[in-house]
Length: 214
Image (cartoon, rainbow, N blue to C red; front, side, top):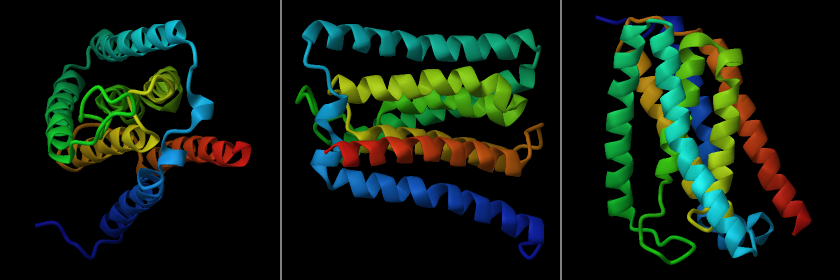
């Protein structure tokens, strides 16, 4: 039986809680503030540009996961491949279930499946898994693509900011749960915390910029 009084055990869960607090606050802050949650400064007024960015975002979702899986296979990390799929499928199912439960209308009024963003969740998992298993340098391209996908969903009126942040957060939670229930190789929690806080810093500064410009 695991000792709940073990200092490492407590630190591990403190890190998890810290990583949850800031994104949750940002999600709550934006969710109930429509002006901040769907800022005009991020939107395209050109319909052609909207269609193009939407298509690029859609393709990048497939591309990101295809590259992640290819990278894992090139490394002949078959256990990692199994873990990736084991995380991806429940995440996709949970995201869809939450959409049907919350029924938040999209900014473009197309349907009521806005919250959370499936594109954001399923692209962020590629970044966070590669980082978690192989390191920050190798995961950096995935981070950049994921941020672009998140931006594309906001700028083309398919999602609010809180939808995208929630997608990111869901991926983090699922990866964390996977890490706690497997003895396979993952990187240290201190490096993982650094990565999460870096992403939060980027998102926070983006929101701050929006507020200042308004």
